[in-house]
Amino acid sequence: MIELEGTKVRDTPVNLSDCLVQDGRPDRVEGRHVNMPIELGSTMVFDTLAEFERARDARYESGTLYYGRYGNAATYKLETMLAKLEGAEAVTLTSSGVAAVSTTLMALTRPGAHLLVADNVYGNTRAFCDGLLTQQGVEVEYFDPMIGAGIAELIRETTAAIMFESPGSGTFEMPDIRAIAGAAQKADVATVLDNTWGTPVFSQPLAWGVDIVVYSGSKYISGHSDCMLGITASNAAYAKVIRKTVMQIGDKTGGQEILLALRGLRTLKLRLDHIDRAGREMANWFATQSQVKTVLHPALPSCPGHENWARDFTGAAGLFGVIFHTTNESAVRAFVDALHHFGIGVSWGGFESLVLPVTPVRTATGWSEPGQLVRFNIGLEDLESLKADLLAALPLLDP
Image (cartoon, rainbow, N blue to C red; front, side, top):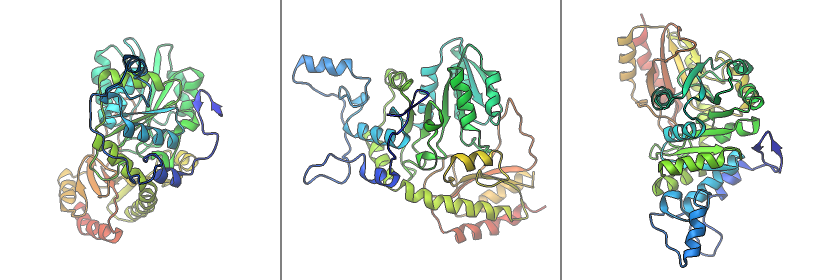
């Protein structure tokens, strides 16, 4: 097995398409089902006290059948499959993406610890850091997400972890993941990267030195807007402490969510191949419209950190931002309300297209970009229908 700075790295290439179709399925017996069944249950019984005690003592290890809250056969199939895709030592599932972030940061910090957080993180990540973590005595410091190797100057003796995203929520700056991870490794500081946008189809941050990758599995992983799921993939140094923290808090992924995630993974690459093409086409189309000032899409040279995306990613998600020239809030509201093919919702990564005005929150770098920022998620609809819908509504943004 090849090792890279404490991170488990694949010693043989993983065929992504084969893994998505063949892994995480019932064991090979004649007459088996194509899919894993939904497993519902709390109590697991043993024939001897010695067997029970062995399971109890190993209850924090993935694959141990002890009690329903710790996982079952379907849970472990999904965790093993995701770990293979990520090149991770282990994966721990949670009830939501927010739970994946929160439990990971709780596992890494203690009262008096210093936590570095990118200034463009997801709003709920910021709320957790400013709320519960701060109340527990953790010092949270926000940093410029484009700082790169300069993060080394912010690391202290008490720094426990660095939390950042690829790309940033709402504003889509793509950080230099390798530079931040490299600086953190030299200082023996854990790095936590939210890679929900990229998924393991387009990027594998653990191979670049990141310690822990978190996802909202409710987005592209499940892919159908019907599942609440969080995923934490980590290297050997942090796998056990994260799993133990999740289990001690009592977070639990439901049996139906496990099945929905396994189902979604079967078509993940096919969906993202389409969404990559569709998202880029729509982003380039937006850039030609007179009402548009800037398109924030990592695959476009106009987006901060585009060079990092081009180096590290093999594709792009369908979520991006558009800054319109107008600053008239009423006009923006009228534009959003006039759209028919774009639903208004806070999530993304499903089969439907979505739209949502965004007001960035910054405390370290500020956000002074004039114009209104609106976030778009491109789904699986016909692109000409989406363009026609937008063309009918865009004049509402004219002066």
